Length: 219
Image 1 (cartoon, rainbow, N blue to C red):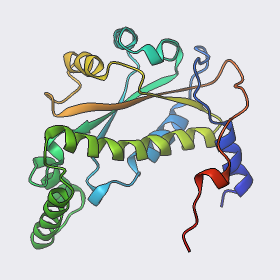
Image 2: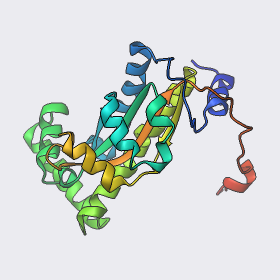
Image 3: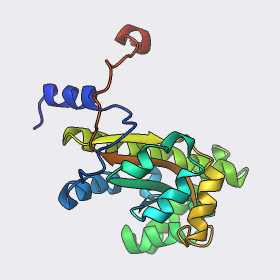
């Protein structure tokens, strides 16, 4: 098992890397492990609302840079750049994606699948996730951040830097991805982006609130 010191060291190492060494690339094996940590991340009812677009095309990166004020230095220098997409209506209880997940991925018998779909419907209605398309998409996006965190932590454990990126016009970024044929005809929306690579500058000291300021024990 990994030691406590190694875990804490990884979290101390991780920072929002603003510029990467453009000549230093992550190996295929290491990046596949980062992707695998995202793929294996938990999701509500196990319905995996995400797709991970690994954007290595320089022209597409430059188009994204024009609408991404928070990624001006990351997009040109990152070894790997990932857009985490989420399904829109595809996360409804009665969607084709949910049906495919239960049959082709989870291999549920028909009766079990029907019961799970009904529980999923109740969950979505009770929590008002079906009120608007935006409500449903935002709920899927919350799950994308679980995968995002796991990917960044996995990278840090391997000494690989990362930077989560929301600093962009997400609608414009999504339009660029749509024009490139990467949104499955509008079924996928952009949740968040993240850059990976190796730092060129050492970061300053990490600043955080104390444990007493952020943790409340309820006994």
